[in-house]
Image (tube, rainbow, N blue to C red; front, side, top):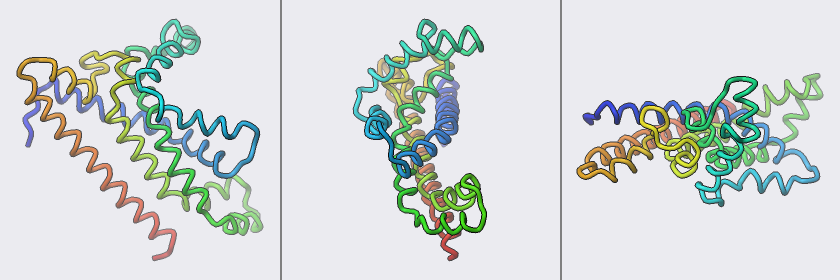
Length: 231
């Protein structure tokens, strides 16, 4: 059992909270965008496709800067949220969740889109002919069949959020107890003489969490596949 200090435990707990919140809030948008890209043809689809995957090719610091000028207290979106709803994202853990969700979003959309494209459309058509509305067809046929892809996308987003560093530290800084995630804490410890041991412990924790998430994802995906294939 690793003997983590209170500061290290705080970084681990904060990272888990941020990654879970980022994944939970990104998931509905990921399903919607994945469905849109998989099923619809419209003007600007190529542009939307490029925008979705843009965080994968942009330097994370650039993404963090764009978030800062958009969602910061003086940014157009940030000022609106602060003035009308009292929501402040910059230099808060909620802002870290936003940046992690943005960085993990492309990894979430891809498997969801592929899972939706692989579904036999005749199954949906059959449900429609039996009187089910499009929304009911999506909820009872499409989404369950795409569940392995949804699970894979959610886990990839969670893992990316757990390891996010560049965009987060640019947008919300590195504030202990507020925005200092595992990655930021490791970076901080490596700047301190004698901090290598603490950094090493956090590296082991990050490896354990990521491995557990991947194993859980594989198990849930297999269970979902067996359930809907009637095995």
